Image (tube, rainbow over the protein chains, first blue to last red):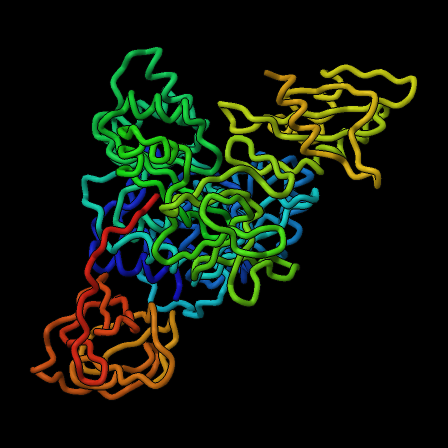
Length: 499
Length: 101
C-alpha cells in the first residue's frame, strides 16, 4: 500500500483527467504521475531522507507529495508562518531532507543549496516526463509527518503511515466518482491534515483541485465563480467571512457550488444558519477529525443539516451543532475519567478506533493503546442516535482559526518579560475564530506593564497569530492548595467578564 | 496463501492486479482467471486464462466474497474473474460513503 498507487490507478484509467491547477497551469493525472516520477528521481539522486515542504498551495504540492511517496520518504509540510527560529528548530530535525521553499524562506532556515528547490523549480524541472514503474509497497512506511502542537511548547511530529492514509481514502470515497465537470477549491494550508487528506482523496476521486494560496473572501468568491467550483473546503473562520461578504454585497453565491465541507474548529451555529440561508443550493458537510486520525472520523452530512434545520424537535434541531456520525470504518467510545464507557447523553473523553488512526509521534511512544483505541483529548457526548457533540478540550489546548495554540508556549514567553511574575493563557470563545487568546498577568512587586507591552513582547517572539487578543492584570492567579492553576475557573471568570 | 491487508497481488492469467483491503486470517485460496494469484512483485510463468472465469475485473471496483470477510480493490483491469475457493467474488454494492473531501 502506497498512496502513489491511488494516483497510478487514476493515471491508468483516466490519464487526461485534470487533477490540479494553479496560476493557469493545469496538470492531468498522467502528467502528475510522470512529474512525480521525475521529481522522485531527483530525490533519489540527492539521497533525500524526506521532503520538507515550505511552500504554499500550488501544483508543486501534489508533485511533492507523490514524489516523496514514490521515493519512499516522508512528506513533511511545515507552517511557513512559524518564526525563523522555530522553523530552523524543526528543519534541523530532518537531516538530509530535500526542501521545497521559495528563496526567501530557504534563507530563513539557512539550508545547503543543493537540497533546495523553489515551488516554481519543482514545476519547471518536472516538465520533462517519464512514467514511474515501481515504488515501495510497505504499508508501514511513513507517508507524512505533520507537526502538531502538544501541551508543552515543543511541537511534536505526528506519524501517518501509508496504510493510515490509504485506509482513510478507501473508507470515505469511491474510485473515479468525480466527473470532469467537478472542481474543488482548496484554501486550507498544506501543513494541515485536512489539506493532505483532501489532496489524496481528490486524486482518487478524479476531481480537479484549484488551489488558492492566500485566502481572502473576494478572491475566493471570484475564483469559485470563474472556475465553476462545485466543491469547497473551508475552516469556520473563512466561511464566516465569506458569508459576511455575501450578505453585505448582496451578490448570489457561486452558482456551480454544490457541496461545502467545513471543519478544523468549532462552527458557531449562528454563522452556519446564516450560511444555510444564504446558500440554499449548497450541501453542507461538517467534518471532525484530528491529525492523528488522518483527518475525518465523523461527518454531519448535507441531509443531516437539512433535517436539523427543518425539524421542530429540539433533539434533532440541536444536531446542527454536532459533528455528525462516525464513518462506517471507525468506532467511537465516550469514556469517563476512570475509563468506563458512558451511556448516550453522558459526557466524557472521546476515544476513536479504526485503520486510519495512528497516534504515533516521532521520538515518543504511541498514545494509541494495544486495542487500537486513541484518546482524542476532546470532551463530548453521543446522543440517542449516535450523533457526536464536541464540548471542548480535555487538555488546555486552544484552537484558534483551526490551528492548535499551546498555552504553555505563550506563558513561557510572557513570563520572560521583566515586569511579569506569573501568567496564565487561556482560550475564550469567539464567534469568528472559535477561540481567542487571553492572557492573565501578575506583575512583579512594584512593576507595571500595559496590555500593549505584553502583546508587543509576544508578537516579537512568536508572531502575530499567537499574540493574546486580551490581556488582563490580576494581583494573583487562582490556584489549588498544591499550587496548581485553576484554569477552568479562571476561564469561566473571564468569559463572564468579556461579555 | 495468507492474505495481509495492504498486500499487492496479481493474476498470472491476465493483467488484473489487486490490493487486499480486508482479509480473514488463515489460508485463502485466491484466484483470478482460473489460476492462483501471486504477490505483485513475484516472478511467475504466465498461465492460460480459463474462459469460464473471464468476466473481467475492473480498476477501482471492490470485490468481496459472500461472507464479506475478504475485500479486494482492483488496481489494474484484467480479463479474469476473481475467485475465492473457486467461487466468483462480487462487486461490493456501492453504499454512498459520507465523504468530507
